[in-house]
Length: 476
Image (cartoon, rainbow, N blue to C red; front, side):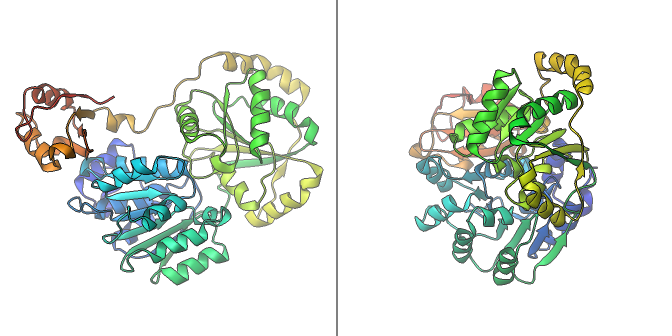
């Protein structure tokens, strides 16, 4: 067993957690899950990297009823990347219970989202603007909603979303469980919890800067930052590193210079088209390149394993962002290092950060020319070798799943029960082997679990559904 049996979760959830490599609950999970299962409101103060997504996703997957077609849970996130990631986490945890989650956010086809929301959906994850849009246009039905999660609430406030969040809350049924998570609890967030939550249980986890992150500061001047960065990266020689800049223009400039210097790198900021942003994050998670140059968009909730070094090329604009930046490293119990470059006129912001985290950041000297010279050949060797791809924690759970495409859907009057009834009659296959079914106008996608994909594929080439012979193949 994996330490989650204490919560008396249903077998399908435990099976998914085991497949995903969850061994023992983190502190936030151990505190949140039992209270959430009792359907009590929660205000959770917890650092990024503490396992908070699973803390709310596990009880939601446990408590939603599969039979209900309309959304039962709404999870609000500040960024599109986080919305997509949380949706994937919910799908993976609810995999064997066939939980259907949908992500809705801006800069993506509204019509496509509208079609997805028309289908059976248990959990909706979205950014406030697009969620409000769907609510106002009547394309997101919330009459059966039982759970609301406000994730990264302080960042919603920073990004100016708090009014939209309030408008969303007012449109939801009052009889629901509300969970609010935030790394910090500014006054406006406290007010939100007082106004819209019913006697919430307050859960506070971890110090602001975790003991497994060693963070340092190097004094420099603006014009020396690039050569300092090259020296630091040469000496540290990380496998995986995020370099934070304050502006999109700063990211573009630094990325160009590092690429020219032959760094294995890519960039991420809010002005890039969404597909490119997702592709960059996906490649970084897989370890296809070593250095990600990014704005603070990457400081929030983005879960990339084994980032050993975070560099703030520019001091962040506010103290909270510092905490989120350094929280990209030292995740899941590993140790990490964070180095900030500060110019003489940034001393005030540095003081604010230190007051906020309740400790002084250690000042260190730039690497000496002797250290840089010693590190040169190992750095060059790593830059010229292909990065070793990172192990994806969902690989194991997904390797036995085959997604099948059928060329018929709603227009042919096909329903979920028609697919389940037909497939479950195939010798050696049961309803337990059928995962999420997505029925569109002219197509249907069916996840076949437990390594039975090829058996079902072969049988369905000669089997009718509701008297109709459909073309079937493995979905691309």
